[in-house]
Image (cartoon, rainbow, N blue to C red; front, side):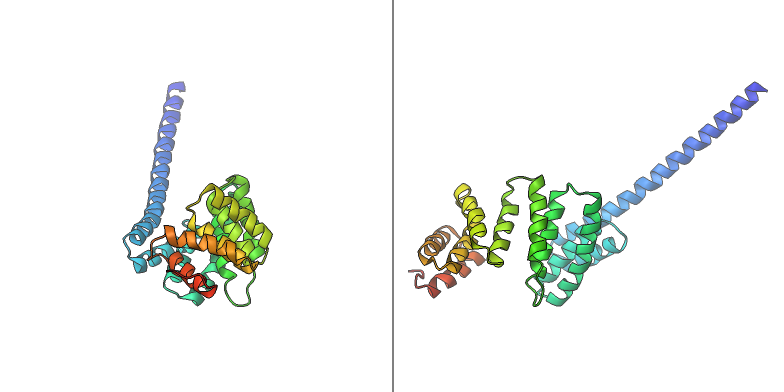
Length: 235
């Protein structure tokens, strides 16, 4: 009787192990499929097939596969195509997805940065002012990743955009001193000096950009335009 009972227990355990293995296999397969969908979107994006990438990101978001990142990438594609209204609509979904994600993953500094970037772009739309939200998200990112140059650049940029000239100068000048060829930081530092009516300091940094930047770059063209305005164009 005891041997029969032990055999039954052994059979039950074997069935349970098989069921568990099956569940793990199915779960692993589902995870792999989900991961593959997002990776497919990334690969299509890298290959320049933005239409396919957009559709794949959209499918990923609809299926709950990294929706915050999927909406973020969709927004970038729309911005690149200058579809401003559609990008703005997607940004609302992205904000919600990032907020939900960050509630569960508050130590993801890159997610805080991406959320800040969304607020920055939304604030460029008429009647929208979410610069303070961008600052809060960037400060969260910097609490996790101290002295991150990219995060500091964006914080300095936001201060410049909202007219906090001293805060913008402090951050951007420190970046330029540490990284002289950080052209993004140097450009917005020069623009900040222009807003403070300090044309000489602005010219100094604009001149550096022209001397150290490829003529095909956007910063070169923007700098050349600003220098001409203040009487210090290229020779």
